Length: 261
Ligand SMILES: C[S@@+](CC[C@H](N)C(=O)[O-])C[C@H]1O[C@@H](n2cnc3c(N)ncnc32)[C@H](O)[C@@H]1O
Image 1: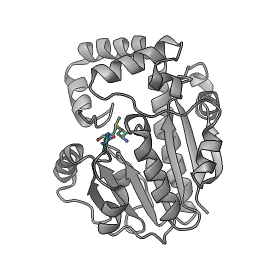
Image 2: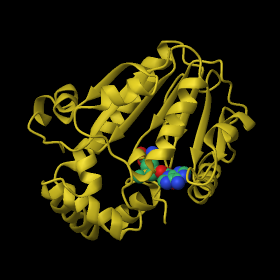
Image 3: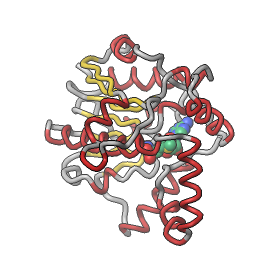
Image 4: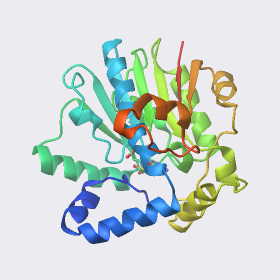
């Protein structure tokens, strides 16, 4: 299995800068295959950013970014540096590439970011985090962006269980997910079938989804409270206004957030 870093990684941007025609063709191809998913992913980045910023204002002490890839929040969101410990957790193969890139850009690895190499399929997240200085008593935000779909359900359960039992009061999770029908191949929408076929062909088969309408019950059963599901229709309304108001989003990508108490 390969481990993609990010749809918008620096390699992609460098390629785009010097191959504009080819890039246009590729983006049109992906838009035909996955209509409006690109817009959903753009909103996702903004929604997750805003969530982090609100948490910083609300007394956040640790930020744990699971499956970080080329997530740049640690380096660009104000208020993290010097105040909040950031843990970037990722597959060792992808994380080693990221670390080299961060060193190349900043000349040094930032001292408030701790890199935790973990293969979720074979290693235990909790043990690795604690060994790297994660403090179970602090208010912590866990992000899983573009991750849950690639992880086996059992590992999702273990991860949620670790978070509920090992984080300070008022800690939170935020993740995005597909409906179970996309993962098990019963989704009738063409975009759903295309997502499944494409990820399978890429060697990154979808492994986890949540049945429509049950995310609240799913997270409450696992010990979370104040669960909020954010549908495509809702995030479109939140972010696409004015000249962007007619932009469409992909109904298959939702966000979910919850608190530990
Ligand atoms: C689609 S990328 C998302 C990256 C980033 N969060 C973003 O939104 O741009 C999926 C990420 O999950 C990580 N990942 C996938 N399977 C993993 C596994 N078994 N263990 C650890 N990380 C994994 C990959 O290394 C990659 O960084």
